Amino acid sequence: MDARFLYPLESCKIIHLLRHGQALHNVEAEKDRNALLSPHLFDAPLTDHGHQQVEKLRERVVSSGLLKRVELVVTSPLLRTMQTAVGVFGNEDKQPNMTSSPTILALEVARDRNGVRPPDMRRNVSEYQTLFPNIDFSQIESEEDNLWRPDVRESEEEILARGLEFMKWLWKRPEKEVAVVSHGIVLQHMLYVFANDCEESIRHELCKRFANCEIRTVVIVDKGLGTSSTDN
Image (cartoon, rainbow, N blue to C red; front, side):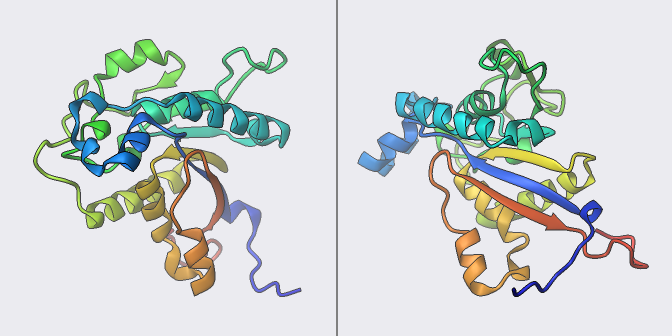
């Protein structure tokens, strides 16, 4: 047994990172990458196959007991991610014996890479509230999408900064087990925040590209807990 580290449970958080199911723009981009510039793919929804992926993952989440353990679900405020979040973690009357499901919170910092591509632009919050009455949109300040820019694509450095911002926010939350429903490149950059703490082989496996509807679980640790430092 090669156990190298011991940390008290109170210094750890379990994070389940989930990429949305297959969406319409994923299919079209496989045929032609230029399709990602089409206004017809604005806020692309899940495909039928994407919904099937979500349903299968839902079954796994329920049977494994994960649904009962997750205290909070954070989702990107785009159609495909919220369809995935509600489909996997929402109650939706699928489990009659379930009296509650975790809170689902929409957060701008978890959204896809911003700019240029219409699939990554969101709708007005009021429209989403009608579609997803059980999602909490209280953390989104603007009714309209004022982050997406038609002529400037967000850089990877900016996405990495977002990932760091998100992880700092998440660490301050009281919940110990959280699910994050987001987008492939954003999830990878969230993991890059901690990649230097891993061996090369682990880092490569941990930060590889996410498949649609893939869930990847990590534990983040406050190594300074119990020391003289108060920083996380």
